[in-house]
Length: 336
Image 1: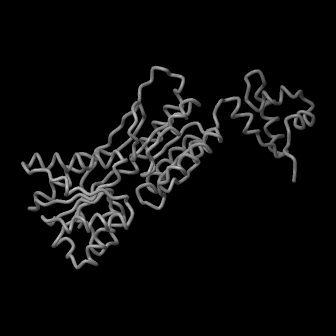
Image 2: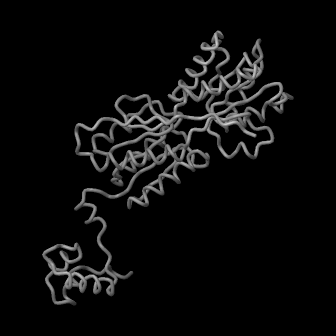
Image 3: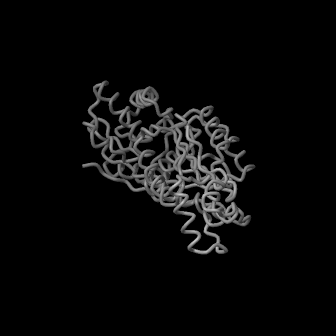
């Protein structure tokens, strides 16, 4: 294996001092433009590459950002990471991307590994099964800023970017109410997710604003898996006041529920109409897609999250800097 070329070797070839060559490579004003040019050309000819570790140490940064997502196969997160990557690239940052697969233990280990790799900051959408958030809180001791997006933990004084789920839920329910439905079910997510509470709150507000009594038995939580969605649907269709419409936690949960409904002989969007969240591309390929879906703008969320984190990294010595709490309005989109 060829040994890397050193500044000392460049200095010897040019008959210059080590310090002169070092300053020339760093474009120090004490070195003439002609000498800087000669040093750069010789360094290039000899195949010299800067010692990144030394540069990182000197600048106090690694120019690396960690990103932890639940599942990259989900269209929402794939779109978000694409937007994040574009801005990171333009800002000369490298991304270290990992998936928690919705597992708290794995998420904790990933945070530890990224800390050890000296990331400058972390973007994270928390796992659905995470109930203890100490692993994120500990990063504060190392001066590593965190920006949460989409899935936000129930913590105070955090930086986050999220879609307005509550108003989106209200839109979804109002849409179904205008279509004449009164028995509307909600297949919600795990209670540990703030967004599950926001969906429920929007559902309740929409019902109450239309002078309809809220029935808690019409809200069923699931773990977002296919089995969980199937069980939630089974609970709702067995309800004594069988729902004529259902709002799903996201397009994947709704797709599972629709698939199961068809197996049970239910006429989808006839016997039961469905509305969902995420507005993922998957709905374009479904034989029976939900009538509408709440757009949560993953590209915008990703862009705002990375820009917020870069700002925090740039101004991390500003002790008076407050927390960023960015909420992006959602929008109900009808499917043709």
